[in-house]
Amino acid sequence: MDVSWLFLSTPAAEHFSQVVQTTPAQVKNDMGRIFKELSRKAGPGCVFSAEKENAFVIQGATGFADIEKKKPLTADSVFNLASVSKQFTAFAIHLLATEKKLSLDDSVRQYVPELGSYADPVTLRHLLHHTGGLPSYEDAAEAQGIPDTKPLSQATALQLLAAEKQPLFAPGTRFSYSNTGYFMLSLVVERVSGKSIRQFSEQAIFKPLEMNHTQIVDTYPLTFEVARGYKRSFWGGARLYESPWEVTGDGQVHSTVGDLMKWGANLQNGTVGGPNLLAVMSRAGPRVAIDHEDYAMGLSPKLYKGTRLLEHSGGWAGYSTQFLDFPDAHITVAVLCNAEDLDAATYSEKIADVLAVEKWASAR
Image (cartoon, rainbow, N blue to C red):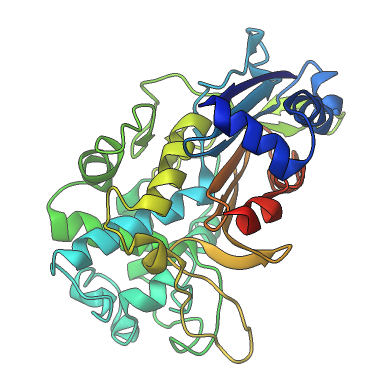
């Protein structure tokens, strides 16, 4: 694996060695070992980055962005983030709520009246925390013979949901991870702002944060180059896996590890979103007694070796992704892989262990 390392200041390099109690060269070798098995194969792979603001940046890449063309993955490769996208949808809702253009306690039907009356008691807050009970648009599409390898527009997905007559459960009584909920939130953003969520996010989030390689895909075919997604074939090789589904909100943000480092820094400093942003994005919804799941604003808050962590994973149509943000350590880690059987979550935790994030949290 080609691993690059940058200290942003000389004192930072000295401080790193004191905290982690190893040399930068050893850390670099450890990072390479994490992905050693991948680097031996001429197939899809992963890109990673880890950054502590004003201290260090380390990143690496192994594998091919396009196997047929033998195009290697680089730190600038663009990936479909899959469900890692949800935090950006939640953030867009937060921005609109801050501007008093909506309330989290509004009914989703106030903005999406196409849903049946059963959705009247379902609020935006329920949707943010996966306790809304709305039917699955994916299941509805499958029932209509629309697999994820065939086109599915937002309009068609909404029509399928409009035909549903009852919820999966009463809102607020269960936690059930819901892509439909975040799809509805993207429609709320569009109808409140008067812009597509792609346009709104570009203007309100990505441009201000100089996330210049990040955009939301809401139509196919693609108009820019991405790392192509793959899945394991019956014979053990990698075969191309592409989905032309155009539903947004639950996924469809395309980005790079470098841009995700900028996003992680924003979570910590609130450049866009204000100084209380971290508290807002990490505030879990009310626990549902039978599930006891903690889910905040498109992020899962938890403890990792005693250190606060905000995280989300993603898996969709040939991609495996993971985003970690350690607020007390001020460290962000992202791993993006272009094969669904590659375990981005495990890789990211191994990187966090090499960086000894728990020591950084206590060293502040």
